[in-house]
Image 1 (cartoon, rainbow, N blue to C red):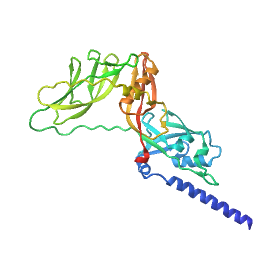
Image 2: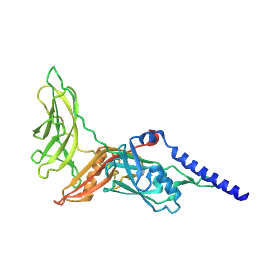
Image 3: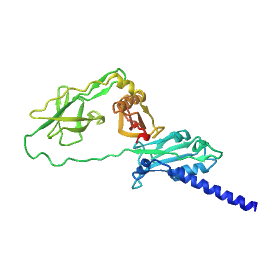
Image 4: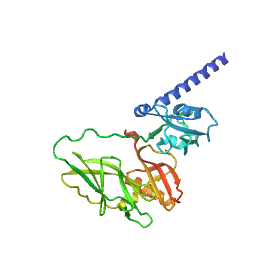
Length: 332
């Protein structure tokens, strides 16, 4: 009789544990559930993220275990390293240590450093917690315009641009000149003319438009700067607009607070701002990282994740990554 009662108690305990795990996994914000239709987070070892957490909670020897997280779209394609970021909630950030992203598998390593943080200890029996992992992917889209203006006056939109690079060694900025560099707009309909102090971009339009362009070093063929300008309409000949002001001291101070890391996992949720790339011709990595901080700060970013180092045959180095901005999930 005692044995039967013990078996019944054991079965009830297992059933209660299973229901608790299912309930903890189900207690997720509605927004996170909606995002699952766009991206899916999984691990190479255990599949879906909820099953991964449950497996680590069930394995008493799991502490120190490495898992490898991948981000999948609706077609099952993996997002490449540098094209996504991961953010664990507060509990997850205590439980896991983030490693680097392996370009061959597009997987980011997470190491379980504190298994006890996967459980709640507010009762006599530890209860498994639901650990939240948010993935953000960089996506691109390209679209061309439609029909043009069919009548009226021919309007000529123009804007003067004076691209510059930050001189972190000596301070200030260095304006790029047409004798060494050229501007290539992404829109083929935009015309470029050289001015005494820079370039002018021209386009026929009935309204203001934003146009992206690259500044190319003729000597190396490298893209030194990517930016965009707003074209304002006027009738008659194009005229240049005032040059952009050098970066303020406030921006320089803020740049020093930008996190630059080779990992794609952050302790806070973040949204993607833009892919980012900088180059130092002298091969000085600290200088390149400072340049990346300054570029990210100018974009309003808080961190650059998935940073990769590329060395050129000429001794130069190039850093590439993804600029992200922290977001408050509770307010969304």
